[in-house]
Length: 278
Image (cartoon, rainbow, N blue to C red; front, top):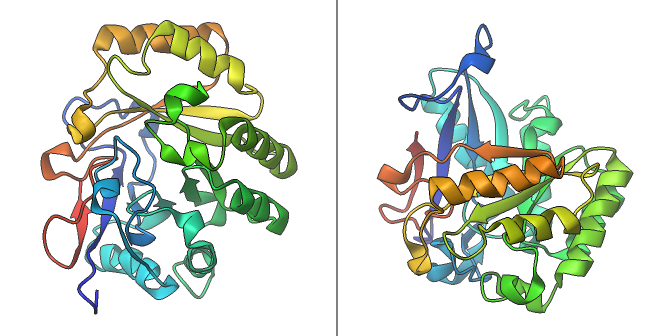
């Protein structure tokens, strides 16, 4: 950035290009990219498992700087950019006006021409802004980072719990789903020995209305905060509980770890800003 602030964007290929990945669902479909964009330089929320949180907060990005990340990827891409996710560095709802302005530009026919329903804005749980987002009636999708269903155990992982408690957050996301008639994505990073037990899965299934949400299960990337990935056995048992509870879920592909571009790894380690190409 012009002031030396460092941010990162990540180019995500669809279908996945990792060796051994199951791409059967994409047979005959268009190859495309989704861009994961940053909304802030650094982040003030200090989530224990996220490398960006270790940087602290530097400043908000303006809409042009957010849109510029997508344009930079599109300028070098060998396939079309069809989606954007506000899941990079920073908390979009602590930069609400510029994040929404950027999303509007990205979805405008004279902007990046991305379908609004293919733009997802993720928050760690800024409840008043979730309420505002719902009231404004945006077509962009909402995602919420939860990572533990038990408030006392979520607090050390996500200090925002102290300001915006889980009960208030869940009420807001349920209300959003009802108002918009679409499921809210609930992001859950599996941390080995911390939130990956069958009891943790049962707490998650009990907390949320299965008709209103979809759980996005994410493997831990890197070793931020000393955390580790759940074992395959623990992960399987966790997912079995969700399946038995008929809770909709998906397993998010965790790619890019080898270049520190995986979910939770973005810390702008080199250059003023960059677009990581997965």
